[in-house]
Length: 267
DNA sequence: CATCAACAGAAGCTCGGGTT
DNA sequence: AACCCGAGCTTCTGTTGATG
Image (cartoon, rainbow, N blue to C red; front, side, top):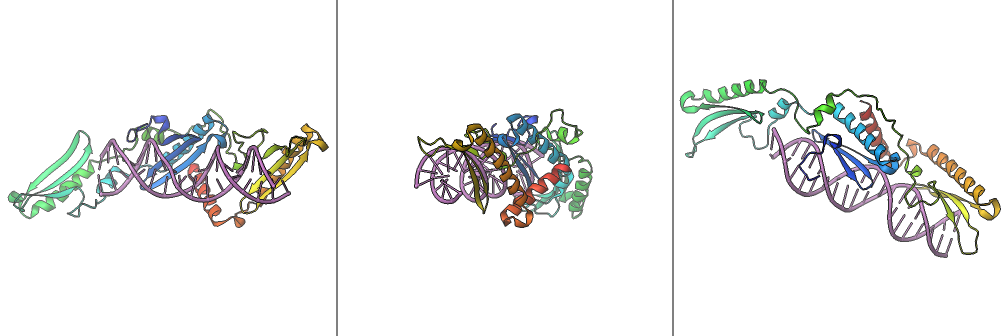
């Protein structure tokens, strides 16, 4: 999708990525973003559904600013101190008129001139008053994406399709995984060796723990089963040890980020 | 000119698999 | 069992072009 052209409604704020989908929506200078990987949610469909759910939550909980609020905000190039009011200067440098101008819509732009010749010093005050009247006619919220309003005003319906919970990184099975279970692989040190199944789990800052189950001792099926069970125990120990008090500053920031994201989702 | 959607990619974490 | 490297995945920030 070329830049500047809005996505179709279903994909509002959502960009497809090689690994899944990314949601990115900006409200009043704050960017709300979250990524939904295929691997984390089980399938492309689940990743998209959950991306849409999260986006809808953001759109509902953070509405655009009022059009009037936006119109009243002073731009850096404003020279009069009142938004929508400016003076028209003649080529001689003399102020010709004070003007009140308000953009109501594409086919309705309000504009009233107050010539200084006819009205004298009152022209400026009259223009400011006129601008206030013009703003009275400006209603509603800022228009953003064509789909924004429909999403915001639609009731948050119960999803027809069930949502699968997000998996932790440790639970994600890479496309290169050969065993079918993340963190469990078959090892064969050399040609003559019958090999063994290895359960291995990495923990940031602590390195990895691993345990091997020899084919010679347990047989291929039992060794694999034991490795899978060991991997589950390793994950359990890892999750139990991941207490907030033990997190590194960076991890803590991430944890807080995730929490605020979820809180937003609950709004 | 500010704000937004859409896009792009760097950086860091984690895992798989080979090797010792 | 441990180490190492390359690659997958996530997080986060920067850029571009449209719009009002």
